[in-house]
Length: 178
Image 1 (cartoon, rainbow, N blue to C red):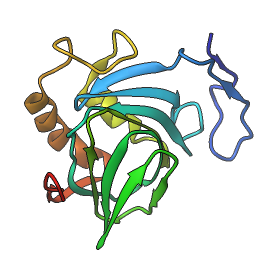
Image 2 (tube, one colour):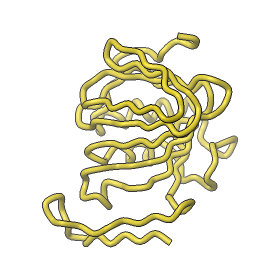
Image 3 (spheres, rainbow, N blue to C red):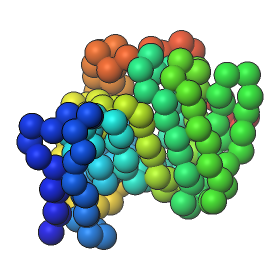
């Protein structure tokens, strides 16, 4: 049972109420070959924060991109990934954290042989809606299989929809093995 106790007419200047989401009850979205479990949406936070647990399979890589509005932070729970942020490259393992200010070009690649799970945060919190628009509601809390959308279709949609969310693709993905 999700208990969202934020007044419908609240805005960022109005004190809201707590949002409680028991384990395993987050709404899921399958997008870009991944599972996004929505822990806190922009609507629930008055627009200030979005939080999701994201699971991604080995080999997934984003193109180099930037967000004109959102800062992002990631706390890696399981697995490993390589992250490029500006001119720096970082190798993240479980327990590592990275924060990306708005406008910093960044990309990542999931490395290793197992999926990664990370806590993703965006400020302001509207970025999760991009993945809702690109993907499908998750039938189960697992990575999508044949029941998800084909990746080429989602990448095309991500590129079409992304600019409305302040997403700008500025380069290719991190090469495999980099």
